Length: 326
Image (cartoon, rainbow, N blue to C red; front, side, top):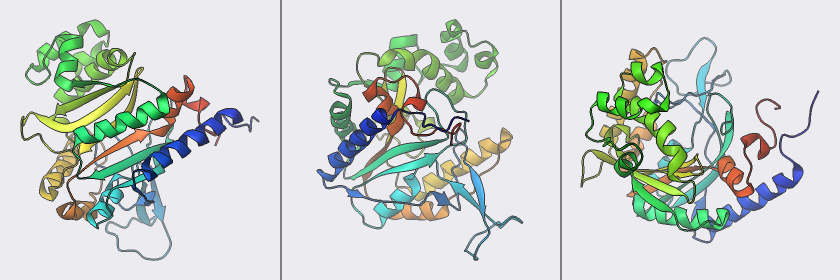
């Protein structure tokens, strides 16, 4: 039986050095490093994310819907909700390097357990946060200036179609050459079609020479971001790509608890319609948004960043043990 780590020891030493440089980047800017729980009584409602579920069978805790096996707990897909609760409590700007867990297929860029860098800047909008993230990428990847495109510009540049005004039929026609077969033809959800086109047509070509920030995502994909006051069709959200890899997802953070609750409930309605399990809403997080200061935040995949920094082609090459060898 093979008991060896998946990454070489020399690579793991490089990984440690990179993480130290990342930590120093934020310490020098006087961000507070925090730790938050990996387990929560609530998961995430996002229909594209799947949480690992376990049960707590020890002492009583204040929880609803206690099942026969005990209190259901969820491994966090991101430390976001707890970090925002700290922000609402007055922490000031914060960062965290932590493990996150997503119950999805493992592959070249995916391991169910992965390392995530997440940070929040009080008083920043998403443009200011993009500028700071560019500085971090230049430090770690030794790359040049980053490119910036709106979501609309990216679609027009690659597929010659406007994602903010095109019909579903026109969008499908623009991707006919991608050879996605019935997947694209039979899909009826507008945002899923947009995501298919973005993943298979746009991601592979927009950032081969330099990292690229894509911003102003459709309002229907706002997640936890604010809607732009300048254009209600788009959200103040950005993602970062480099050499075909999605590196990060950031928001000018929504601090409207009523609107956030509506979005979570809409997620669960989608889950119900599509035979996915509904997820318990994190009402503590929702309540905390009433006190959330104006801020912007972003989550960046450390393992993928290290792949790029060390010129490796598979996530297995940059982590000590993958799920296959754990």
